[in-house]
Amino acid sequence: MAEAVRIATRKSPLALWQARAVATLLQQRFPGLAAELVELTTEGDRILDAPLSRIGGKGLFIKELEAALLDGRADLAVHSLKDVTSLFPPGLVLAAVPEREDPRDAWVSPGGVRFGSLPRGARVGTSSLRRACQLRAARPDVEVVPLRGNVGTRIRKTTELGLAGAILALAGLRRLGLEGQVTEVLPVEAMLPAVGQGALALECRTDSPLRSRLEALEHARTRICVDAERGFLETLEGGCTVPLAAHAVWEGDALWVRGLVGAPDGSEVLRAERRGPAGEARALGRSLATELLDRGARALLASHAGERSGV
Image (cartoon, rainbow, N blue to C red):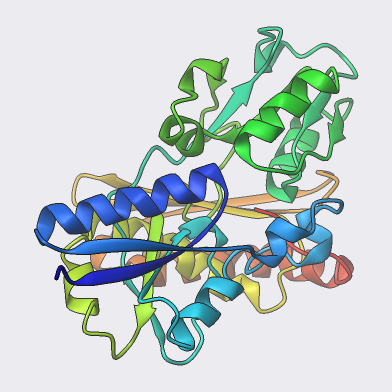
């Protein structure tokens, strides 16, 4: 009988695609390995009538999957890395980060309106504080319309609500075969991505015999980039109540890391960047966050203590 791996996943089409993709990678590397999906509903899936920023932000889509790992119902959990908090529960570990998909955001407009040509007062769909902050900072006249649900639902609602368009992660659209819906890909200068966007997180128990096999799926250059971004996140997340973004790319043998912290209404946006050795990725991210804290992010965190950060 083939050895079986139980993979915890959310039930959304994107989450199921990601879990199946990881199962395929494992089976290609370890022939004879069988995979079984353990489909779970998370708090973020259940609460669809409130913005993520109000009900908890990060962690809403992973807690139930982590519980399944800890109580033995699953051997592996597959997450979108941007949903993963900076700290893991005792007994669990980020075993591997496979090669990343394009981390940029995409603009989806049913009418084909270009993002840079939005008419005054245009209505744009997103429930992400990060996206809303950057959009409002550039275009204070634009109305942000909350848009929850899976990728297909958000695209459908964009049309049903008569919106000029919506901002979604390019990676999710590509993975679901919906890249044809993309009106344009947004440059990071216009919309800095979420920490870990486009990357997958493979989480297991620290003592799991599966851990060494998962490590075979690790993509070193991706891990280094997300380590820098997550270093930025972990320095801010303890009291993070405002939108944040971080994006790391390779420049030769070094890293270029950009970060952002802003007010939810876009009235203030703080940006900084660092270049440094790839071997100091996490330290680069932490240094970037510390600079922004010193330049005013600490006051932003304090002034918006009643809100939560969106992804």
